Image (cartoon, rainbow, N blue to C red; front, side):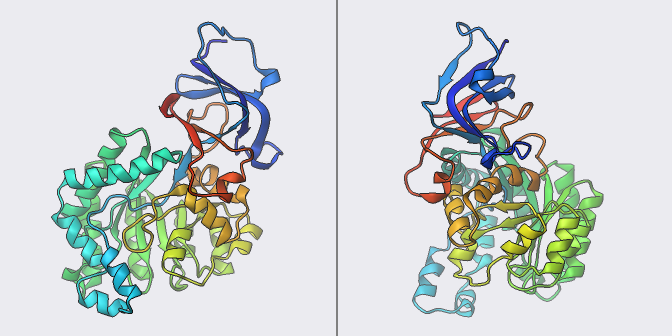
Length: 408
């Protein structure tokens, strides 16, 4: 066999559901790479003969190999921070007090409008570096802190540039309908028209987004407005997803699922009817334990219903300056287990195979499987459960992206 590299003396958590073992595990495994893809994976005793003199061989010393991690919901591009609001809240200020002082999402919108692309790129690059060192090889980045055409396009350009200049693959999502900007506070419908008739055509013309998202909630966009945006996006050939059922249950998830949404995200208030709808339509449920933790929420997502209806559960960071300033996918693994009671295997699936499905990339990444991109990590752990069990000392030894060693 002619391969570019071979990994031996490893245990592999393939996350391949076709295997009958937990984590799709293969103990004493081997894996081969050719042209940036996985060319062979299986028990080392079955590894075909290859030219050991001309092929680089990496030895894992009995440690565990997993697919590269995927953070399927982030707001990685933004300017400024809201630490002052965090302090104000803990000193007794209400959300109304903070808003009157110019805080909340509008403070981030103001900072993003004022920032140039170089500033946005550099701050986001540092955040992407932090995720990359923890084993993340694919990330989704949303816009949504511009709320005007120029700034939304600017944020998406920065996200695209990050993908061109970083080893982590970047999927971009247009979230122009994230909040109602001050200019339209008394006319949300007019802002929706701006999103659809001005922003979206320019996003498509400049090829700046892979998907479109909306925040469907009482404090943001109602069902009719949301459906209007998602329908326009779907007709334009873009993938769709939704911030849904975070603060109340207004039926956004069911509506989005029937439109073919890849995912519905947050979903703390999702009921069984909504769970059935996303199950029937193959929509993923994206769980965001960082926001649940940071906002000190008490309403848990319907985990048991999601299990019963076999909905793919995704775990993501929701990294953003207001409700989840936590730039760590590894931390989300622990929080998904401790706060939401996922099993470690469910949590790892949530940042690999299920996260890939939520981004529409299930045929490329998320599993150690023949023909998949050679995106994988070697971890200094004795069992896959350790990835969710402990946090603080990064166990990531190596990261391989498209067959290239990018972190060691």
